[in-house]
Image (cartoon, rainbow, N blue to C red; front, side, top):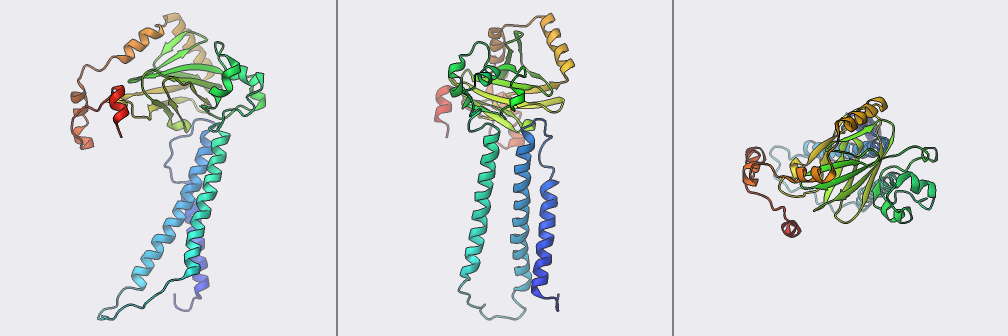
Length: 327
């Protein structure tokens, strides 16, 4: 590049890095399909972080590669390299820029978390209409604001408050999820919801801490023994999506999975009618069935994963005491 001013070269490199970062930040393909109203906001934050991360990677690694080539020791040169004291303005610059980026991302992520209801599900919880829209018929709405603080999910717009919210009670236990539909009495091992309808999951744990995670919905909530938590969302795509326990809860934690099936409104009504017509088991029976351990012993079960995980086929503790002692 002899003859080209350094300022021009620097500008061209900056333009190239910016264009590559912007393109990859929007086309990385690392996230699963977005299936809820909350997912788009989370994806925007992730895309921004990927854009910034790609730019920083290209700048740092590019500078290293250029330095390795341009300032490499010449053949036959046995002299010492130049003594460099440092560059205070440059050190201030490369310290300030990351600090500003981290601060900006923290403010932006906090704003999204607040909009999704993570900080407080509804700051306007004093409204009786909001309490009635979210609370199930057997809850005391006067105490609901404390419950709402343990929720996650984008609060509904004022026009949505009159919408008939679908409430589903979810019980987590070793090692399964049990769903109860209070309005119909249906008890099921899967989550069935209609597309485009506000859904509120009332989460509880029977034994240890579990976590209800919907990757395609970009939401996750802990299920804590003795404490009510909630997830509020609206599905935007029909389909079948995995539900995963994202909190280590015992030996068979990896197998604590189910699925959420998002129907069209007509298909959901049809599913409800079929389940009612076929008769539903009671909750105690479902819990007893879900609590049964596989016929294999812990060692036999873990042996299936020994080769792929490179781990000893030994059972992991899953009692209350053992879980408390785990690091």
